Amino acid sequence: MSNRLPVDHVSGDGDDAVWRPSPGGLVAALEPIMKREDGVWIGWVGIPDAEFEPFEADGIDIRPVSLSAQDVEYYYEGFSNDTLWPLYHDVIAPPSFHREWWDAYVQVNRRFADAALEAAAPGAVVWVHDYQLQLVPKMLRDARPDLVIGFFDHIPFPAYGIYSQLPWRKQVVEGLLGADVIGFQRLADAGNFARAVRRLLGHETRGSVIEVPLGEDEGVGHRHVKTNRRGTRVRTVLAKQFPISIDAARYEELASQPEIQARAQQIREELGNPKTIMLGVDRLDYTKGIGHRLKAYGELLRDHAVDTDDITLVQVASPSRERVETYKQLRDEVELTVSRINGDYSTISHTAISYLHQGYPREEMVALYLAADVMLVTALRDGMNLVAKEYVASRIDNDGVLVLSEFTGASDELKQALLVNPHDIEGLKDAMVRAIEMPKRERARRMRALRKRVLAYDVQRWSATFFDALTHVTAEDDFGDHEIAQRPKMATDTHGQIHERGDR
View 1: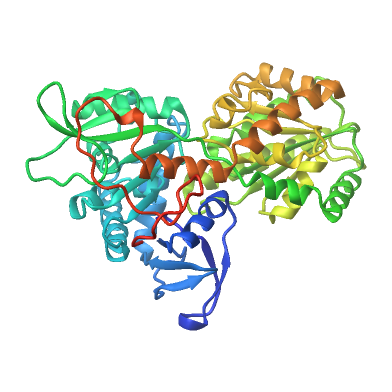
View 2: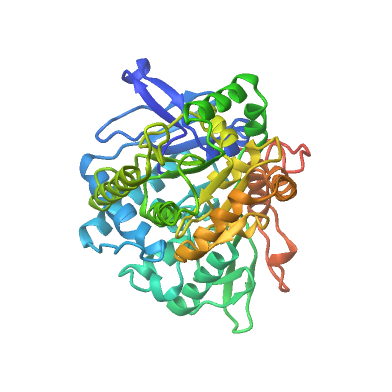
Protein backbone atom coordinates (compact mmCIF):
# COMPACT_ATOMS: atom_id res chain seq x y z
CA MET A 1 0.00 0.00 0.00
CA SER A 2 1.37 3.39 -1.03
CA ASN A 3 -0.03 6.81 -1.82
CA ARG A 4 0.51 6.21 -5.54
CA LEU A 5 0.01 3.06 -7.55
CA PRO A 6 2.91 1.37 -9.38
CA VAL A 7 1.29 2.38 -12.69
CA ASP A 8 0.42 5.72 -14.28
CA HIS A 9 -2.77 6.34 -16.21
CA VAL A 10 -2.08 7.12 -19.88
CA SER A 11 -5.53 7.29 -21.47
CA GLY A 12 -9.03 5.83 -21.57
CA ASP A 13 -11.57 4.82 -18.97
CA GLY A 14 -12.85 1.57 -17.54
CA ASP A 15 -11.77 -1.52 -19.45
CA ASP A 16 -10.27 0.71 -22.15
CA ALA A 17 -7.87 2.43 -19.74
CA VAL A 18 -4.19 2.30 -20.74
CA TRP A 19 -1.55 2.15 -17.99
CA ARG A 20 2.25 2.27 -17.99
CA PRO A 21 4.62 1.19 -15.19
CA SER A 22 5.77 4.00 -12.91
CA PRO A 23 9.48 4.66 -12.64
CA GLY A 24 11.08 4.19 -9.26
CA GLY A 25 12.91 1.75 -7.05
CA LEU A 26 9.92 0.73 -4.94
CA VAL A 27 8.18 -0.84 -7.92
CA ALA A 28 11.36 -2.69 -8.93
CA ALA A 29 11.82 -3.96 -5.38
CA LEU A 30 8.30 -5.23 -4.80
CA GLU A 31 7.22 -6.44 -8.25
CA PRO A 32 8.79 -9.92 -7.93
CA ILE A 33 7.31 -10.44 -4.45
CA MET A 34 3.89 -9.16 -5.53
CA LYS A 35 3.77 -11.59 -8.43
CA ARG A 36 5.13 -14.53 -6.44
CA GLU A 37 2.79 -14.05 -3.49
CA ASP A 38 -0.36 -13.18 -5.45
CA GLY A 39 -0.18 -9.67 -4.05
CA VAL A 40 -2.53 -6.72 -4.22
CA TRP A 41 -1.24 -3.13 -4.59
CA ILE A 42 -3.48 -0.40 -3.17
CA GLY A 43 -2.95 3.25 -4.05
CA TRP A 44 -4.21 6.41 -5.72
CA VAL A 45 -4.13 6.74 -9.51
CA GLY A 46 -2.86 10.32 -9.33
CA ILE A 47 -5.98 11.89 -10.88
CA PRO A 48 -8.57 13.69 -8.71
CA ASP A 49 -12.20 12.59 -8.91
CA ALA A 50 -11.30 9.56 -11.06
CA GLU A 51 -13.02 6.24 -10.39
CA PHE A 52 -11.44 3.00 -11.60
CA GLU A 53 -12.43 -0.58 -10.89
CA PRO A 54 -9.76 -3.04 -9.75
CA PHE A 55 -7.61 -4.30 -12.63
CA GLU A 56 -4.47 -6.30 -13.31
CA ALA A 57 -1.25 -4.72 -14.58
CA ASP A 58 1.79 -6.81 -15.46
CA GLY A 59 0.65 -9.65 -13.24
CA ILE A 60 -0.15 -7.48 -10.19
CA ASP A 61 -3.67 -7.06 -8.81
CA ILE A 62 -4.30 -3.29 -8.64
CA ARG A 63 -6.92 -1.77 -6.30
CA PRO A 64 -7.30 1.98 -6.95
CA VAL A 65 -8.32 4.36 -4.16
CA SER A 66 -10.25 7.44 -5.28
CA LEU A 67 -9.40 10.96 -4.07
CA SER A 68 -11.58 13.99 -4.67
CA ALA A 69 -10.12 17.34 -5.70
CA GLN A 70 -10.59 18.49 -2.09
CA ASP A 71 -8.83 15.36 -0.81
CA VAL A 72 -5.88 16.20 -3.05
CA GLU A 73 -5.85 19.79 -1.78
CA TYR A 74 -6.24 19.00 1.93
CA TYR A 75 -4.75 15.51 2.45
CA TYR A 76 -2.02 15.47 -0.20
CA GLU A 77 -0.94 19.02 -1.02
CA GLY A 78 -1.94 20.24 2.42
CA PHE A 79 -1.25 17.91 5.33
CA SER A 80 1.18 15.54 3.61
CA ASN A 81 3.26 18.09 1.68
CA ASP A 82 2.77 21.39 3.53
CA THR A 83 2.64 20.03 7.09
CA LEU A 84 4.47 16.70 7.40
CA TRP A 85 7.07 17.16 4.64
CA PRO A 86 8.62 20.40 5.93
CA LEU A 87 8.26 19.31 9.57
CA TYR A 88 9.99 15.97 8.94
CA HIS A 89 12.76 17.74 6.99
CA ASP A 90 13.88 19.79 9.97
CA VAL A 91 11.60 22.77 9.22
CA ILE A 92 13.74 23.94 6.30
CA ALA A 93 10.49 25.60 5.25
CA PRO A 94 7.82 26.46 7.84
CA PRO A 95 5.07 23.83 8.16
CA SER A 96 1.40 24.82 8.18
CA PHE A 97 -1.00 23.36 10.74
CA HIS A 98 -4.66 23.35 9.71
CA ARG A 99 -7.35 21.26 11.40
CA GLU A 100 -9.23 20.81 8.13
CA TRP A 101 -6.11 19.26 6.60
CA TRP A 102 -5.74 16.88 9.54
CA ASP A 103 -9.39 15.81 9.27
CA ALA A 104 -8.87 15.03 5.57
CA TYR A 105 -5.68 13.08 6.39
CA VAL A 106 -7.62 10.91 8.85
CA GLN A 107 -10.46 10.32 6.39
CA VAL A 108 -8.16 9.37 3.51
CA ASN A 109 -6.09 7.06 5.73
CA ARG A 110 -9.35 5.39 6.72
CA ARG A 111 -10.25 4.93 3.06
CA PHE A 112 -6.90 3.25 2.38
CA ALA A 113 -7.28 1.04 5.45
CA ASP A 114 -10.78 -0.04 4.36
CA ALA A 115 -9.42 -0.98 0.94
CA ALA A 116 -6.76 -3.15 2.59
CA LEU A 117 -9.27 -4.79 4.90
CA GLU A 118 -11.42 -5.70 1.92
CA ALA A 119 -8.49 -7.19 0.01
CA ALA A 120 -6.67 -9.00 2.83
CA ALA A 121 -7.28 -12.69 3.48
CA PRO A 122 -6.85 -14.06 7.04
CA GLY A 123 -3.25 -13.65 8.21
CA ALA A 124 -2.29 -11.50 5.23
CA VAL A 125 0.92 -9.48 5.20
CA VAL A 126 0.23 -5.76 4.65
CA TRP A 127 3.16 -3.45 3.90
CA VAL A 128 2.27 0.24 4.20
CA HIS A 129 4.57 2.86 2.69
CA ASP A 130 5.46 6.40 3.63
CA TYR A 131 4.37 9.49 5.49
CA GLN A 132 1.04 9.93 3.71
CA LEU A 133 -0.36 6.80 5.41
CA GLN A 134 0.96 6.87 8.97
CA LEU A 135 -2.43 6.24 10.57
CA VAL A 136 -3.20 3.11 8.55
CA PRO A 137 -1.28 0.55 10.69
CA LYS A 138 -3.37 1.20 13.83
CA MET A 139 -6.59 1.25 11.82
CA LEU A 140 -5.70 -2.18 10.45
CA ARG A 141 -4.56 -3.50 13.85
CA ASP A 142 -7.79 -2.41 15.57
CA ALA A 143 -9.97 -4.05 12.91
CA ARG A 144 -7.89 -7.15 12.11
CA PRO A 145 -5.33 -8.27 14.70
CA ASP A 146 -4.64 -11.34 12.53
CA LEU A 147 -2.84 -9.20 9.95
CA VAL A 148 0.94 -8.95 9.78
CA ILE A 149 1.59 -5.22 9.34
CA GLY A 150 4.75 -3.49 8.22
CA PHE A 151 5.39 0.23 7.70
CA PHE A 152 8.31 1.84 5.92
CA ASP A 153 9.08 5.55 6.27
CA HIS A 154 10.88 6.78 3.15
CA ILE A 155 11.64 10.24 4.57
CA PRO A 156 13.44 11.31 7.77
CA PHE A 157 11.79 11.13 11.17
CA PRO A 158 12.70 14.33 13.02
CA ALA A 159 14.15 14.88 16.48
CA TYR A 160 11.55 15.22 19.21
CA GLY A 161 12.09 18.96 19.64
CA ILE A 162 10.90 19.41 16.05
CA TYR A 163 8.33 16.60 15.94
CA SER A 164 6.65 17.87 19.11
CA GLN A 165 5.40 20.91 17.19
CA LEU A 166 2.84 18.72 15.43
CA PRO A 167 -0.55 19.21 17.15
CA TRP A 168 -1.48 15.60 16.34
CA ARG A 169 1.88 14.16 17.38
CA LYS A 170 0.43 11.48 19.67
CA GLN A 171 -2.12 10.25 17.12
CA VAL A 172 0.57 9.78 14.47
CA VAL A 173 2.88 7.84 16.80
CA GLU A 174 -0.02 5.64 17.91
CA GLY A 175 -0.92 5.09 14.26
CA LEU A 176 2.58 3.86 13.42
CA LEU A 177 2.71 1.58 16.47
CA GLY A 178 -0.09 -0.46 14.95
CA ALA A 179 2.61 -2.06 12.79
CA ASP A 180 4.68 -5.11 13.74
CA VAL A 181 7.78 -3.68 12.06
CA ILE A 182 8.47 0.02 11.40
CA GLY A 183 11.34 0.66 9.02
CA PHE A 184 13.41 3.84 8.74
CA GLN A 185 16.21 4.93 6.43
CA ARG A 186 18.74 5.73 9.14
CA LEU A 187 19.59 4.62 12.66
CA ALA A 188 19.07 8.21 13.82
CA ASP A 189 15.51 8.23 12.45
CA ALA A 190 14.65 5.05 14.35
CA GLY A 191 16.16 6.60 17.51
CA ASN A 192 14.12 9.78 17.04
CA PHE A 193 10.95 7.72 16.75
CA ALA A 194 11.74 5.68 19.87
CA ARG A 195 12.33 8.91 21.84
CA ALA A 196 8.99 10.28 20.64
CA VAL A 197 7.29 7.09 21.83
CA ARG A 198 8.87 7.37 25.27
CA ARG A 199 8.08 11.08 25.63
CA LEU A 200 4.50 10.95 24.36
CA LEU A 201 3.27 7.52 25.46
CA GLY A 202 5.69 6.37 28.13
CA HIS A 203 6.22 2.96 26.49
CA GLU A 204 9.40 1.09 27.26
CA THR A 205 11.97 0.72 24.48
CA ARG A 206 14.94 -1.65 24.45
CA GLY A 207 17.26 -1.25 21.53
CA SER A 208 15.11 -1.57 18.41
CA VAL A 209 12.14 -3.06 20.27
CA ILE A 210 9.19 -1.05 21.60
CA GLU A 211 6.78 -2.57 24.11
CA VAL A 212 3.16 -1.60 23.40
CA PRO A 213 0.77 -2.39 26.28
CA LEU A 214 -2.19 -4.62 25.36
CA GLY A 215 -5.76 -4.32 26.55
CA GLU A 216 -7.38 -7.33 28.21
CA ASP A 217 -9.23 -8.43 25.08
CA GLU A 218 -6.87 -7.03 22.47
CA GLY A 219 -5.67 -9.33 19.71
CA VAL A 220 -1.93 -9.64 19.25
CA GLY A 221 -1.14 -10.72 15.70
CA HIS A 222 1.90 -12.90 15.04
CA ARG A 223 4.72 -11.20 16.93
CA HIS A 224 5.86 -11.73 20.49
CA VAL A 225 3.63 -11.05 23.45
CA LYS A 226 5.03 -11.05 26.96
CA THR A 227 4.55 -9.73 30.44
CA ASN A 228 7.17 -7.08 31.06
CA ARG A 229 8.94 -6.23 34.30
CA ARG A 230 6.09 -3.94 35.31
CA GLY A 231 3.65 -6.84 35.06
CA THR A 232 2.05 -5.41 31.92
CA ARG A 233 1.13 -7.63 28.98
CA VAL A 234 2.74 -6.06 25.91
CA ARG A 235 3.11 -6.56 22.17
CA THR A 236 6.61 -5.97 20.77
CA VAL A 237 7.15 -3.68 17.80
CA LEU A 238 10.45 -3.71 15.92
CA ALA A 239 11.52 -0.17 14.87
CA LYS A 240 14.89 -0.05 13.13
CA GLN A 241 16.75 1.12 10.05
CA PHE A 242 16.36 -0.63 6.69
CA PRO A 243 18.20 1.67 4.23
CA ILE A 244 16.55 1.51 0.82
CA SER A 245 18.54 1.11 -2.38
CA ILE A 246 18.18 0.82 -6.15
CA ASP A 247 18.03 -1.86 -8.84
CA ALA A 248 21.80 -1.59 -9.28
CA ALA A 249 22.08 -4.37 -11.87
CA ARG A 250 19.64 -2.53 -14.12
CA TYR A 251 21.76 0.64 -14.03
CA GLU A 252 24.88 -1.41 -14.80
CA GLU A 253 23.09 -3.02 -17.71
CA LEU A 254 21.99 0.34 -19.13
CA ALA A 255 25.44 1.86 -18.68
CA SER A 256 26.94 -1.05 -20.68
CA GLN A 257 24.74 -0.43 -23.73
CA PRO A 258 26.73 1.09 -26.65
CA GLU A 259 23.93 3.47 -27.60
CA ILE A 260 23.82 4.95 -24.09
CA GLN A 261 27.60 5.29 -24.01
CA ALA A 262 27.41 7.03 -27.37
CA ARG A 263 24.72 9.35 -26.02
CA ALA A 264 27.00 10.21 -23.07
CA GLN A 265 29.73 11.23 -25.50
CA GLN A 266 27.22 13.22 -27.52
CA ILE A 267 26.16 15.11 -24.36
CA ARG A 268 29.77 16.12 -23.74
CA GLU A 269 30.10 17.34 -27.30
CA GLU A 270 26.84 19.31 -27.12
CA LEU A 271 28.14 21.02 -23.97
CA GLY A 272 31.30 22.10 -25.80
CA ASN A 273 33.58 19.28 -24.56
CA PRO A 274 34.54 21.00 -21.29
CA LYS A 275 37.30 19.48 -19.18
CA THR A 276 34.83 18.93 -16.33
CA ILE A 277 31.06 18.41 -16.28
CA MET A 278 29.41 18.70 -12.88
CA LEU A 279 25.88 17.33 -12.54
CA GLY A 280 22.99 17.89 -10.16
CA VAL A 281 19.80 15.81 -10.46
CA ASP A 282 16.97 16.67 -8.10
CA ARG A 283 13.29 17.20 -7.76
CA LEU A 284 12.80 20.95 -7.50
CA ASP A 285 12.42 20.85 -3.73
CA TYR A 286 13.73 23.10 -0.97
CA THR A 287 15.21 20.09 0.83
CA LYS A 288 17.66 19.39 -2.02
CA GLY A 289 20.04 22.30 -1.40
CA ILE A 290 20.01 23.48 -5.02
CA GLY A 291 20.41 27.11 -3.96
CA HIS A 292 23.45 26.30 -1.81
CA ARG A 293 25.01 24.40 -4.73
CA LEU A 294 24.45 27.29 -7.13
CA LYS A 295 25.83 29.81 -4.64
CA ALA A 296 29.03 27.80 -4.17
CA TYR A 297 29.47 27.33 -7.92
CA GLY A 298 28.81 31.01 -8.61
CA GLU A 299 31.45 32.03 -6.10
CA LEU A 300 34.01 29.67 -7.67
CA LEU A 301 33.39 31.38 -11.00
CA ARG A 302 33.54 34.83 -9.38
CA ASP A 303 36.84 34.06 -7.69
CA HIS A 304 38.30 32.55 -10.89
CA ALA A 305 38.87 29.26 -9.07
CA VAL A 306 37.22 27.64 -12.11
CA ASP A 307 36.69 28.93 -15.63
CA THR A 308 33.61 28.64 -17.80
CA ASP A 309 35.78 27.52 -20.73
CA ASP A 310 36.82 24.45 -18.70
CA ILE A 311 33.72 23.58 -16.67
CA THR A 312 29.95 23.51 -16.88
CA LEU A 313 27.23 22.59 -14.41
CA VAL A 314 24.23 20.64 -15.68
CA GLN A 315 21.30 21.02 -13.28
CA VAL A 316 18.28 18.78 -13.86
CA ALA A 317 15.43 20.05 -11.66
CA SER A 318 12.35 17.95 -12.34
CA PRO A 319 8.97 19.60 -11.62
CA SER A 320 7.53 18.94 -8.17
CA ARG A 321 4.31 19.96 -6.37
CA GLU A 322 3.87 22.95 -8.62
CA ARG A 323 0.55 23.95 -7.05
CA VAL A 324 2.10 24.42 -3.60
CA GLU A 325 3.09 28.07 -3.06
CA THR A 326 6.46 27.29 -1.44
CA TYR A 327 7.50 25.35 -4.53
CA LYS A 328 6.41 28.14 -6.88
CA GLN A 329 8.64 30.55 -4.95
CA LEU A 330 11.54 28.08 -4.98
CA ARG A 331 11.38 27.75 -8.75
CA ASP A 332 11.48 31.52 -9.15
CA GLU A 333 14.49 31.79 -6.84
CA VAL A 334 16.46 28.98 -8.52
CA GLU A 335 15.79 30.21 -12.04
CA LEU A 336 16.71 33.79 -11.10
CA THR A 337 20.02 32.56 -9.65
CA VAL A 338 20.75 30.48 -12.76
CA SER A 339 20.01 33.46 -14.99
CA ARG A 340 22.31 35.74 -13.00
CA ILE A 341 25.21 33.27 -13.04
CA ASN A 342 24.80 32.63 -16.76
CA GLY A 343 24.53 36.34 -17.46
CA ASP A 344 27.70 37.08 -15.50
CA TYR A 345 29.94 34.17 -16.50
CA SER A 346 28.76 32.45 -19.71
CA THR A 347 30.54 33.10 -22.98
CA ILE A 348 29.18 32.80 -26.50
CA SER A 349 30.69 29.32 -26.82
CA HIS A 350 30.36 28.06 -23.23
CA THR A 351 27.41 28.18 -20.83
CA ALA A 352 28.11 28.25 -17.10
CA ILE A 353 24.92 26.34 -16.17
CA SER A 354 22.74 24.16 -18.36
CA TYR A 355 19.43 24.25 -16.47
CA LEU A 356 16.72 21.70 -17.32
CA HIS A 357 13.33 21.97 -15.62
CA GLN A 358 11.96 18.64 -16.80
CA GLY A 359 12.11 14.95 -16.12
CA TYR A 360 13.95 12.42 -18.27
CA PRO A 361 13.67 8.66 -18.88
CA ARG A 362 16.10 6.40 -17.10
CA GLU A 363 18.18 5.80 -20.23
CA GLU A 364 18.88 9.52 -20.62
CA MET A 365 19.73 9.82 -16.93
CA VAL A 366 22.29 7.02 -17.18
CA ALA A 367 23.85 8.79 -20.16
CA LEU A 368 24.08 11.96 -18.06
CA TYR A 369 25.66 10.01 -15.21
CA LEU A 370 28.28 8.60 -17.61
CA ALA A 371 28.96 12.06 -19.05
CA ALA A 372 29.40 13.74 -15.66
CA ASP A 373 32.83 13.91 -14.04
CA VAL A 374 31.43 15.15 -10.71
CA MET A 375 28.03 14.36 -9.19
CA LEU A 376 26.74 16.97 -6.71
CA VAL A 377 24.24 15.77 -4.09
CA THR A 378 23.90 18.65 -1.64
CA ALA A 379 20.56 17.94 0.07
CA LEU A 380 19.91 19.82 3.30
CA ARG A 381 17.93 16.83 4.60
CA ASP A 382 17.06 13.63 2.79
CA GLY A 383 15.77 10.24 3.82
CA MET A 384 18.14 8.42 1.48
CA ASN A 385 18.77 10.13 -1.91
CA LEU A 386 18.82 7.41 -4.51
CA VAL A 387 20.39 9.65 -7.17
CA ALA A 388 23.73 9.20 -5.41
CA LYS A 389 23.41 5.42 -5.69
CA GLU A 390 22.23 5.63 -9.31
CA TYR A 391 25.35 7.60 -10.24
CA VAL A 392 27.61 5.07 -8.54
CA ALA A 393 25.88 2.07 -10.12
CA SER A 394 26.15 3.65 -13.58
CA ARG A 395 29.89 4.26 -13.35
CA ILE A 396 31.01 0.92 -14.73
CA ASP A 397 34.25 2.66 -15.75
CA ASN A 398 35.16 3.20 -12.08
CA ASP A 399 35.53 6.91 -12.73
CA GLY A 400 33.76 10.04 -11.52
CA VAL A 401 33.55 11.71 -8.11
CA LEU A 402 30.52 11.84 -5.84
CA VAL A 403 30.16 14.94 -3.64
CA LEU A 404 27.57 13.95 -1.05
CA SER A 405 25.77 15.80 1.73
CA GLU A 406 26.23 14.30 5.17
CA PHE A 407 22.53 15.01 5.77
CA THR A 408 21.43 12.26 3.38
CA GLY A 409 20.78 8.67 4.38
CA ALA A 410 23.16 7.62 1.60
CA SER A 411 26.07 9.21 3.48
CA ASP A 412 25.81 6.47 6.13
CA GLU A 413 26.75 3.91 3.47
CA LEU A 414 28.76 5.78 0.83
CA LYS A 415 31.75 6.70 2.96
CA GLN A 416 34.16 7.00 0.01
CA ALA A 417 32.26 9.98 -1.40
CA LEU A 418 33.45 13.49 -0.59
CA LEU A 419 31.11 14.20 2.34
CA VAL A 420 30.10 17.83 2.81
CA ASN A 421 27.97 20.08 4.97
CA PRO A 422 26.01 22.02 2.31
CA HIS A 423 25.38 24.88 4.76
CA ASP A 424 29.16 25.45 4.80
CA ILE A 425 29.58 27.24 1.47
CA GLU A 426 33.37 27.47 1.81
CA GLY A 427 33.57 23.76 2.59
CA LEU A 428 31.31 22.98 -0.36
CA LYS A 429 33.51 25.07 -2.67
CA ASP A 430 36.61 23.25 -1.41
CA ALA A 431 34.96 19.88 -2.07
CA MET A 432 34.01 20.92 -5.62
CA VAL A 433 37.59 21.98 -6.37
CA ARG A 434 38.96 18.81 -4.81
CA ALA A 435 36.59 16.72 -6.93
CA ILE A 436 37.62 18.57 -10.10
CA GLU A 437 41.33 18.15 -9.37
CA MET A 438 41.24 14.60 -7.93
CA PRO A 439 43.83 12.30 -9.55
CA LYS A 440 42.45 9.46 -11.66
CA ARG A 441 43.93 6.82 -9.37
CA GLU A 442 42.13 8.21 -6.33
CA ARG A 443 38.89 8.56 -8.31
CA ALA A 444 39.08 4.90 -9.28
CA ARG A 445 39.86 3.74 -5.75
CA ARG A 446 36.93 5.62 -4.28
CA MET A 447 34.48 4.61 -6.99
CA ARG A 448 35.38 0.92 -6.71
CA ALA A 449 34.59 1.02 -3.00
CA LEU A 450 31.32 2.89 -3.59
CA ARG A 451 30.24 0.46 -6.30
CA LYS A 452 31.01 -2.55 -4.13
CA ARG A 453 28.60 -1.22 -1.51
CA VAL A 454 25.80 -0.25 -3.89
CA LEU A 455 25.94 -3.51 -5.84
CA ALA A 456 25.96 -5.66 -2.71
CA TYR A 457 23.15 -3.80 -0.95
CA ASP A 458 20.62 -3.38 -3.74
CA VAL A 459 16.87 -2.86 -3.59
CA GLN A 460 16.12 -6.57 -3.76
CA ARG A 461 18.25 -7.13 -0.67
CA TRP A 462 16.43 -4.25 1.05
CA SER A 463 12.96 -5.68 0.42
CA ALA A 464 14.07 -9.21 1.36
CA THR A 465 15.59 -7.95 4.63
CA PHE A 466 12.41 -6.09 5.56
CA PHE A 467 10.17 -9.06 4.73
CA ASP A 468 12.45 -11.32 6.71
CA ALA A 469 12.07 -9.09 9.78
CA LEU A 470 8.33 -8.84 9.23
CA THR A 471 7.53 -12.52 8.74
CA HIS A 472 10.11 -14.22 10.97
CA VAL A 473 10.55 -14.24 14.72
CA THR A 474 14.11 -13.13 15.42
CA ALA A 475 16.45 -13.25 18.39
CA GLU A 476 16.32 -9.44 18.54
CA ASP A 477 12.72 -9.69 19.75
CA ASP A 478 13.42 -12.24 22.47
CA PHE A 479 13.59 -11.09 26.09
CA GLY A 480 12.24 -14.13 27.86
CA ASP A 481 8.92 -15.92 28.19
CA HIS A 482 6.57 -14.98 25.41
CA GLU A 483 3.75 -16.18 23.22
CA ILE A 484 4.29 -16.48 19.47
CA ALA A 485 1.36 -16.68 17.11
CA GLN A 486 1.68 -18.75 13.95
CA ARG A 487 4.08 -17.35 11.39
CA PRO A 488 2.48 -16.20 8.11
CA LYS A 489 2.73 -18.66 5.26
CA MET A 490 4.71 -17.43 2.26
CA ALA A 491 5.16 -19.19 -1.06
CA THR A 492 8.91 -18.71 -0.68
CA ASP A 493 10.83 -17.11 2.10
CA THR A 494 13.67 -14.63 1.57
CA HIS A 495 16.20 -17.45 1.37
CA GLY A 496 14.37 -19.11 -1.52
CA GLN A 497 13.13 -22.13 0.42
CA ILE A 498 9.72 -23.43 -0.56
CA HIS A 499 6.79 -23.24 1.81
CA GLU A 500 3.19 -24.20 1.35
CA ARG A 501 1.36 -21.26 -0.26
CA GLY A 502 -1.20 -19.75 2.07
CA ASP A 503 -3.73 -17.03 1.49
CA ARG A 504 -2.69 -13.61 0.27
